[in-house]
Length: 172
Image (cartoon, rainbow, N blue to C red; front, side, top):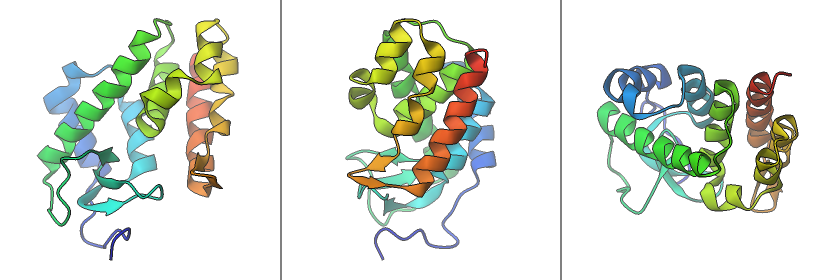
């Protein structure tokens, strides 16, 4: 059934993080803590499914036109897709040219990974970040809890964890 994550097709976030750090660690800036934040929020699925926003997804929250419905992806494929997606989020953040501490950076990567660069670029959060109000930017994260017009409990939890990590880097 589409949209249902089936038992037995889940993959281990811990194993995927280990693969990412072992094989691609020098290709990303996101720390292990940041990877854990994203991975634990997304979970990991070998077979494509539709997320709550009805987008075809595989692995650790990876989307794209190249996902093949019904195909079972390997850990190595999932890790490589995730690295590519994290790099996309990191490039977006790096274009803002705002130096932040690692916990704040990791939280921002988690947020951009989830909402996309386009939505992030036009946000109050980024305006506050660019003005130097790092804590204010972190405090914008709880506003990003909707998929469509529905407030999702999972996003409320996710943003709370991201906000806490973000504020660690903001000195709060």
